[in-house]
Length: 155
Image (cartoon, rainbow, N blue to C red; front, side, top):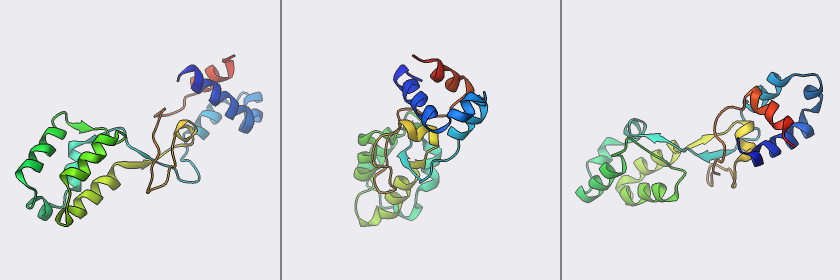
């Protein structure tokens, strides 16, 4: 975590878990941040593999994909994964799978490109966080007991 994130984590711990901190329950505090956020908060995934996308295609729609769009899709997937949190990747989905004959695949890819966050990730996420307008992550992963200890030792 960055120093700014550690400061924010410390403030949240003091506001919500000061009793557990005083009792030395660092592991319990960390695990609470690894539970799913309530209410639900959606973000764009930072990685979506070619394999995951492959499983979302509606194959009858893929038959209607123009060669130029197929070439764009091949280029998009040439690195093995994409980062849907980047606006240009989501625009690529829209541009490649445009038109009424490709709506189901486009919708499946957009749905696949989102996920719910943990309480710890939510603390640092930005944006609206709805299913329609997902937020973005600035921290991804689990909060560890070491993170809690470092935050509480921070300034």
